[in-house]
Length: 130
Image (cartoon, rainbow, N blue to C red; front, side):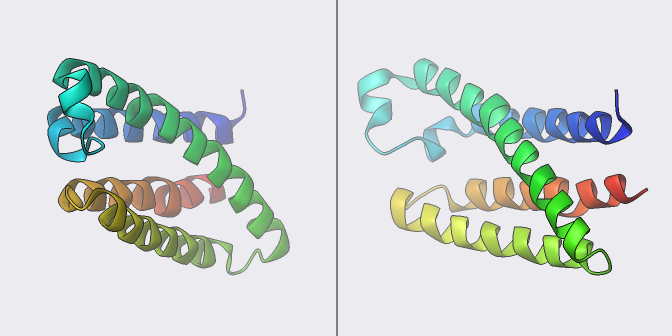
């Protein structure tokens, strides 16, 4: 197995575990408004664990790998810095979107987005550049 795939898998697992813990313990805050009333807390926790613990880290990890490879092949001198700025910009945009849509849970979404920027925007390019 390639060293890049192993590094990416490690980051995905780490980000997934931390995201799952945040989603599990703060499910009442980050759930879609009205979902707790209809489904109950246990069902919402289970769906948030799957979404934030498995689906999102894998999706973001694979997409970020391909975007970083593209940026690294076209602009190798500035790929790491530009990729970090892209990740930070997307995190700010998604945090504002979460504020507009959810109107609560801003601390949780900010921490989740900062975690993704740190894991996939900062750490992944550093490990792949070694």
